[in-house]
Image (cartoon, rainbow, N blue to C red; front, side):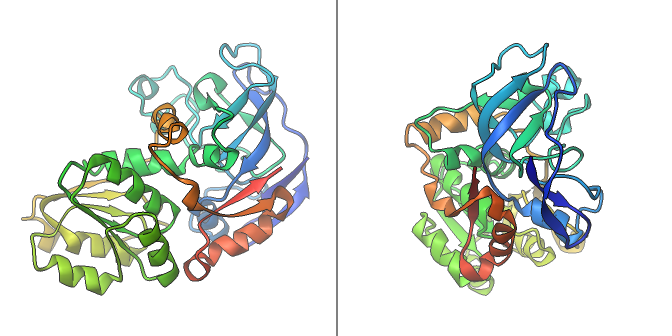
Length: 341
């Protein structure tokens, strides 16, 4: 098969590699009909996540058809249309019993495109298939189905839920990339007073305004605005940049919440000398993807309209072009680029 292979910092290639095979009785093989690129994939290529070994097929988001099934798989059959969760869950360990699938101690967690071969390929082996795939409804477009692998669960679980967004809140999203915009859209379901998107990119601020932000501002503008009041009840840090985290600590009100949903490739400064008396809660976390079935229902019945997060569609064999376009998203406005079989 063909797949995008990581060969070290700054070097990937679209290679011919062996087809995946069933390695454990709980595995399935999925034909990848659509996949996409995540910001964490870019960080792997840039060297911010050095634990990924050269030779690894990248990617952890996908939807497709099951073409082979291990002997112990109970609920997935050949021919099933599935969403592949970005997080694999053994279903047996203490963490999985508590739906903390991202912390799975039984061999799961974020392993696709990280510890084992991932989804930016024609075929992918999915471990623990009964707990790591979800039925895909044919009335949900396949691109939107791919968003359910990672982007939408991360926005909800780590951002909106982790930040305790509540009715009447002022919510600020720092970083108007795909997961930041998804957080903004899902936060609106909680009836906040207003949702403000903050970014340095004019193109992304225009997108945020189009997708429903009450305000889309440069950092200096929003700081001046919020300084006239108590600050934001919830700040969702989605930029992954040290300055974005610092801005979040300046925007949050006393007693407010900061939900860090971005992958940070380096250290950030925590100014406890100014934060210690503010009674601020800072939440971080690996997505668990327990919310995929609920989010799928919202998308399927039109309560959550996410097609605006998809800006481009390319054939799978142009994945390297997609990486280049995605890496320039702050200037071009590119968000999720769907790669179809």
